[in-house]
Length: 347
Ligand code: NAP
Ligand code: F7E
Image (cartoon, rainbow, N blue to C red):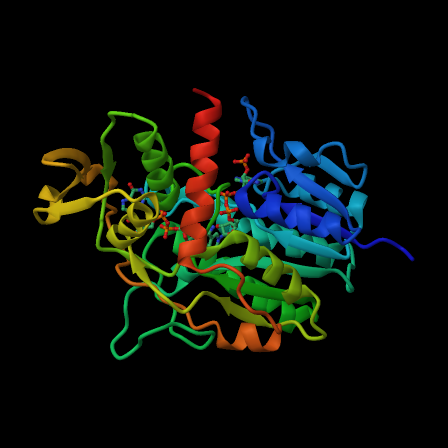
């Protein structure tokens, strides 16, 4: 039987690496689009390099020609567009670049598919809970029908990609889907996202570090799931007989502060919080001693913040017939165990 071929943009990222593993385990040939950078950016996929079915190709979401030639070369059955400038905070500093890559990147792929006449190729767009924006009156959780009011250049760029995916589905009959994913984390999460900043810091702390962690808005609430569950769902979305859009979430929401509390609980660290707003601080209790470990730094505040995100994954879990394997406790354990192991090795 002919092996299925997948093309993944963002293959060097958190999701790209898990999705590559999953597809290779299902006997796919996987083409991964990598951009040329001056540093080594392939740590997350290094272990896959020996696999003959795993092929890396240079390209960039801002460069139509490279996308068209990679699609021509690979003739994929499935395209997963995971590449993006994916940091919400940084999107305020580089809004134009974010729009170029995170917004127009999807259009370039869809145009190449249309131009090359790839009617049977399925397309997955990595949409996001950042589309929903602020908490809306009377709305406790967001689903596929909720109003979308993004609050950052990143969110606005993703909204463009979300809509252009739907438009190409309707206008040209392409099998084009949106996975509207809420935050998902893992030991491979980028080191500047809040959960990973926290687990790396606490892992170092219990190994003796004297550092202090500086964070922004501790009250922000996010619906945090595990990237392994969510990448499996990305694949499932493209295995359906009809192209559609799905919210992927856990249905639970937790503040940044409570994420830290959950980590401390797992590590059996006694933590107390004192003060409010920019003056809030966290201390570890060591017998009668109180060691300062966390402070707020305004530099991590965003010009506009989304305080509350919680998804309703009912449609996805039912239609895709899936039960999430990880809850928040499992996620915290997985991330902390992995960071502790990594830092122990380097000591
Ligand atoms: P990530 O770890 O930040 O990975 C982003 C990937 O995009 C990296 O491989 C990066 O390559 C690549 N990339 C950046 N600019 C590019 C460009 N100009 N051309 C081609 N590739 C480029 O992101 P992730 O957490 O895996 O998320 C995957 C996707 O889902 C992203 O689109 C993100 O916006 C979206 N999303 C993520 C979440 C989440 O909570 N993780 C939730 C909803 C949606 P380098 O390695 O070279 O930087
Ligand atoms: O922030 C607050 C911050 O950067 C989460 C991306 O994958 O998920 C991610 O976007 C919350 C925010 O993720 C710090 O203000 C406090 O309220 O980890 P984050 P994000 O912005 O939710 C969505 C779904 C995506 O689509 C994105 O691609 O934590 N926060 N203190 C902080 N955030 C960071 N990064 N650093 C802090 O020090």
